[in-house]
Amino acid sequence: MAPEPENGHAGPASHEHAGHANTGDAGPGHAGHANNGDAGPGHAGHEGPATHLGHEDPQAATGAGRHAKHAHGHDVSAESDHQYLTIALVLLLAFMAFEVATAFLSHSLALLADAGHMLADAGAIAGSLIALRLSARPETGSHTFGMKRAEILAAVANGITLLVVSALVAFESVERLVHPVHVHGGTLVFVASVGVVVNVAATVTLARANRRSLNIEGAYKHVVTDLYGFIATVIAGIVIVASGFLRADSIASLVVVGLMLKAASSLLRPALHILLEATPDDIDLEDVRRHLLELREVASVHDLHAWTLTSSLPILTAHVVVTDDCIRSGEIGRVLDHLQNCLAGHFDVAHSTLQLEAIGHVDHELGGHV
Image 1 (tube, rainbow, N blue to C red):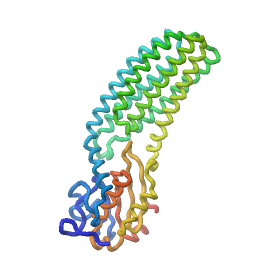
Image 2: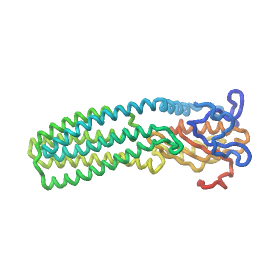
Image 3: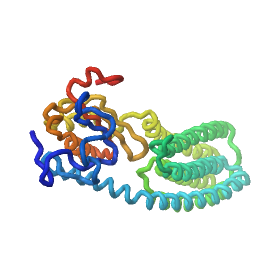
Image 4: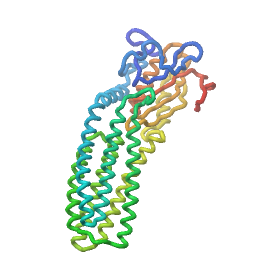
């Protein structure tokens, strides 16, 4: 079908989505195929949703607007996140020093286990602060996506730290189950109660940060896990005071170990999923292919890939074969606009790179796969 003209003329629309588009130059040679983003005159002339092929796409416009709002508030959110992380770090470091001293005085493994977890929490938040700064750095010639993956590396480091600490605490807990030592139950209850208050404050603080970021969510899970651990420690102390059952301390430590392992798993799985460039869980590539093929000018789609650069930033690339009529009519630019706004509106993919090519080009394409 022939697109309706916009602004009284036909031809490529003046719109480039997210500033990344590979489309075809309908010149001689490889008609409809190029990697230079040249979709005809005016294609990169303005931002924002346009009328594509004579029809307004409300969902696409909504998706484009949503990403514009995200970009506008990014700097403010990053500064706020930095403040929240700093407050939580100060709270945890102050209490950790107090808890370590008390743990040695009271001979409490549960308190020491919690202090070890507090150290992991403090390290997690410190790493999150560093990753936050690194990920905000602009793109360069040597780092074309900036350093946005820093937050994913921080999440992996946090997960590994939790695994190491949990292994050490588990070993000591089992040993003390076999050979229990004397624990001051009253001291245990007092210190753990203070820990509950401190961790509630840190949890409330981090809950206000941008938890869509795996970096922030990792720090948040560290603190929430430690909160649960302190609650278990309070219960262990009450049991020791009431009954003298010293093994309650070791049992509480094993509860903390279980929580550490759960937190480590919830951090490592999505982080490794991103590092291995797996397809995002909420994107079905076959569904994407079906949506792209709904446009009559699209003959086929191949080399379709999707991965996540960092939290909440999926990227999609594809080779889109368009009809000869589309190339001859010079409508490639408007087809590209329609496809990219479809990806933004239906799949929340703001960063897409589409290579539009002529029928038959795939037969001599180097390094491609269907």
